[in-house]
Image (cartoon, rainbow, N blue to C red):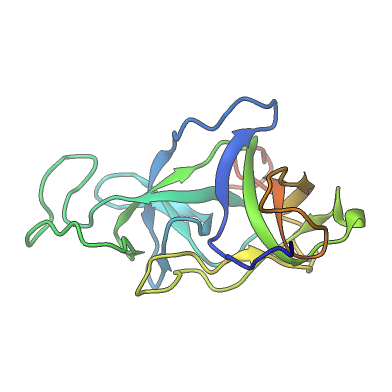
Length: 193
């Protein structure tokens, strides 16, 4: 049976040493002019919230990533003070975060994520590839539209292999791959961000 395209961004599944991903992440604030959803890859800006000191992330690709958005914290509650920031709490889905709102990011530099690639060849294993597709996802569904591309400009993700699962049974179109970050800000020591 052929693979089916189901783009939904990057999904943390385990760590490089094989231990399972347990859902942990850290809080970040979304930069001005940005919209992100769970599954989007975010990058550090080298600054943070002027009121809480929470580090800031952007969906605009740069050399150093922070990780993958795994949750959106409701925009009406400040995660640092626990105080309402205005209005009434809405638990509507999809949860989309825009400038000044908070997200939980799986920011471990050894995280392994599952992601779709439009066309996969066995020689892609070990390749360093970039994110493609638009950040911010589908506003109606809150599903990330990012996937693994073919460009090697930043080489931000290393391909470890194909997901071993019955619904991913062929090498080629719409394969689901396991990848780990290369240019992660917690691995870098030579730049400010």
